[in-house]
Length: 164
Image 1: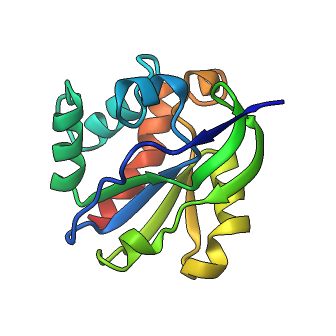
Image 2: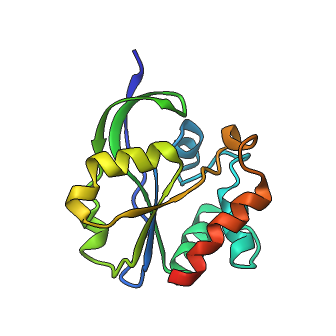
């Protein structure tokens, strides 16, 4: 049976956040690194850096500053679930995060979900509470390299610019 994992990373946001990006659940590597998208082969930070024509933030504090400077809130759909490693397809017994923590304090104009599983979980567990239809973004996971080239990801994530 997959292990029950509880979310250990605080959401990143402030009152000036305008978009909310949601993954599913921090991977074991991200939990160990203490920040989102912590796997060295995950393309999330490289993609965002290219979208905003900046260098890749080198550490967790720089990543948080990058997000806030661009008015991006970052969290995950789930507060806890049963999951095998980082395999989203193995998620069982999901418990959603209370997104009102961010939505009640920031003027969020759009919600983006990274990957199909995050989108499915948001639609099932969060949409009715938030009333905000999510926009799908492809996963930046190394497991998604065959389906989405780096250039495809940068093109897809450029949609963030219109909400900032």
